[in-house]
Image (cartoon, rainbow, N blue to C red; front, side, top):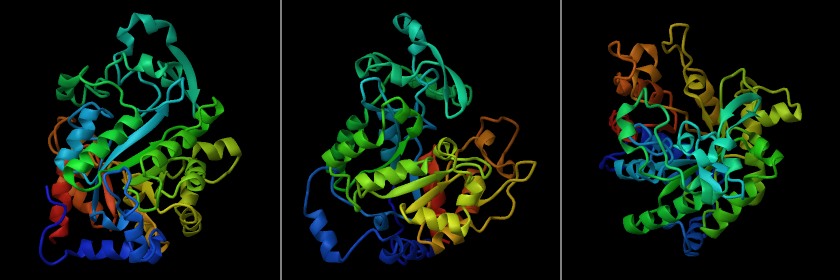
Length: 388
């Protein structure tokens, strides 16, 4: 899957060049400085720049989670093989301080832990970011113990075919993913981009398991701590991104949920601002002071009406671009149940709908990329849009 159609650049390519301009993002210096940076060698399969990414950028959400159990090396490998421009990891800690790849620290639905009688006593009820959960949690296991578990499909009702791969892979550490990316980068002779999220950072810091410092150490060890590193950091908690900005120069994104929600670090610190405040021009200016972009939910780009149909796009793309911020919204999925109502087809919620139509609507707003569970589909949609 090629990243660009050869010949005259499409209008999205030209927009991308403007959005990723040096002055707007403040991420790169002179060409000589970039060459010197690349000449430092090291890990990471080479170095990149946000400006090197295709527009629209397709991010393999938790790998290729539409086809394989999420956050497994199998899911990451498939996303890369399908052509995803970036492969995403979410990070949570173990009891002994290792960073592992899980969307949540609650591993009840994504591993076979319930089938292990030796861990029955670890089942617990915890309140995380104000919500109570009952299950098994990574912070109660050492890495050696977690490695005895096998990964399973999180939503088997929606994706029964993915259960074929239950038990095939273990929970990967982030360091294992960095080694995998290095190996694949050498094989492909170009950097393998990673998109790394700190999950529940305030909660874990309260347990003495802060995520940012061990993450920064790994980024430095593998040469992904510089501003032109082929890696993007992300978090729903702005303070985690601010902390990482003090530790490494790696590009950073602030994730944004629904407009009435508050980042959990805001709740803990008493900051009254909501996401609706953060997507105003003033809020975006504040984000731009320490980050290079935002990762909004798709509903912040095009809201839905009461029937779940797309309405009129907001000004978020224009407002964010005006402040030099790129936008990578989440999440595009093929199944009817995850699509806007006007792009669903048939009555089976798990059948594929008109994902190409939905993607075209989102790309038309000028977003710079999109997270997708099905990166091959998103790449085809991006290629369609680029040729317009």
